[in-house]
Image (cartoon, rainbow, N blue to C red; front, side, top):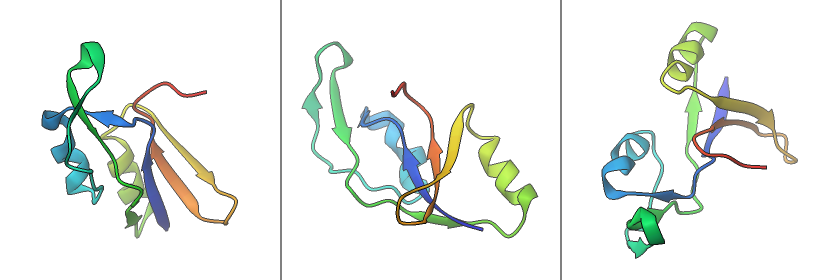
Length: 88
């Protein structure tokens, strides 16, 4: 099963990005002041892909995160979104 990974959140502090970089996400590398949140950076437009050979392997991956969404986009790609921030 192949999925494109995505993240609900847009802004990240420097100490938060290592976990997502390990999954293949890329960040712009420039930090900007976002009010009360301090210095934060954003993701690039690149989204990594991840492949699971079994449902157990997928389940183990999803267990790392409290919330997630799986859907198919308009291009027919399966998206696994790490739901780590509110969205409408």
